[in-house]
Each structure stands twice: as structure tokens, then as C-alpha cells.
Length: 120
Ligand code: 5GP
Image (cartoon, rainbow, N blue to C red; front, side):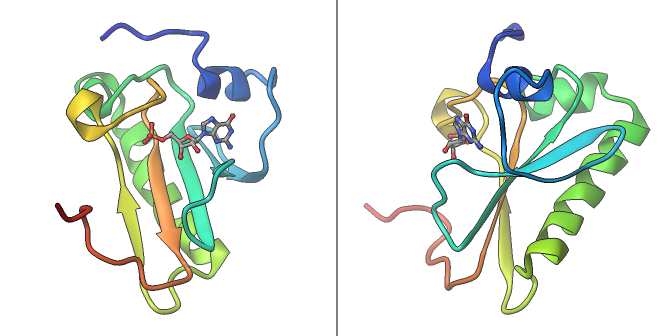
């Protein structure tokens, strides 16, 4: 899959579309999901143009990779999701149900999140 520079998260990164920002650093942006599926639902994205995890691991620098993982942890900390436990999740490609073609990691928390996958 080639990177579409007009995907919604690329436009958020360029400041063309607003977001409810939690924090950002040199390599990452964390912001609240527009349709939260839990009391805490944050998206953590790399600032670089990466479609998916395989694109990211193949082409991102070690600094970008470390920053993304640290940002996920920081998002859980800042939102209070660590109290009681939380979940990180990345949908990749068609089978994964990925809707936005810019790598993003969901951070969920604030309630019992239920089974990892929908049953049935
Ligand atoms: P995916 O299904 O690709 O893993 O997740 C995409 C997520 O992006 C969804 O949870 C959706 O609610 C969120 N989303 C889509 N458009 C926007 C937007 O414009 N702003 C924000 N904050 N979230 C968005």
C-alpha cells in the first residue's frame, strides 16, 4: 500500500484539521479519538509518513520506533488508563480493519474492555 499524503491523520499532522491533542514530541503525536470506544481512547501516531507497522519497522529509524513505544506508554500514563489496566491495539490492513492508512496505535482504558476480539 502506498502512502496517501491526504489521509486524515496526515492532514491533522499538517494542522489542516484540528484534533484534541494530548501531547506531541519530535516523532509522535497523541490525540483523542473522535469517536471514543472507551472512557480513554487515544490515538498515538508517528509524525513520519508510514502506512502500517510493516512499513514503520522496515523504514523508520530506531529513534522513531523508540519514541512511538514511549509515547504509547505516556498516553496511558497521562490519561490515567494505567489505573485498572489498559489496552494498546493497532489495526493493520484489510483483515485488521484499518480505516486510516497512517500507522496509529489505539490506547484504550477506563473500563473493563472485554474480550480481545469480538466473539462470533
Ligand atoms: P482504525 O479503524 O483505522 O484502526 O482507526 C481509525 C480511528 O480513527 C477510528 O477510531 C476513528 O474514530 C478515528 N478517526 C477517524 N477520523 C478521525 C478524525 O478526524 N479525528 C480523530 N481524532 N479521530 C479520527
